[in-house]
Length: 152
Ligand SMILES: [Ca+2]
Ligand SMILES: [Ca+2]
Image 1 (cartoon, rainbow, N blue to C red):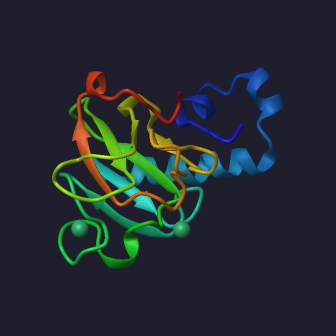
Image 2: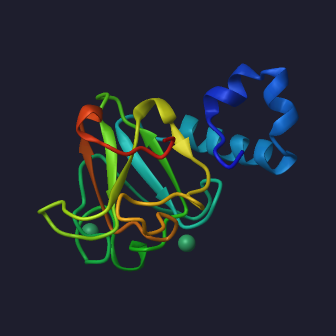
């Protein structure tokens, strides 16, 4: 399993323990720790897998991760390999391959209930492009307005 959710680790189901490799268990621990220490109401992104290599965190939206403004800047664009959702509002976080306030183009979403994604490898935006090292903007959005999620 590429995706290792904190809820899975917490439940500690015997059946899951069989199919989750050791590296996956370690990954879950790393992102669990990151989640537990994350500020309530914020979305986080990391340059590497397993919530390693902190890029930034945002309470609001950032329409361009490659500019010099907002929570994500410069080299943050096209660099995230794991993300974490510590939101408190119930909204999902929608991440885009492109930039701009028109919020257009390929995207995918992470629900509050997903907590985090320890590796974006293998996931694609609605456009078909890879999410891994492909996120360039994000915003908070009602789950019902998202047609694609990382877990689907
Ligand atoms: Ca920015
Ligand atoms: Ca990266």
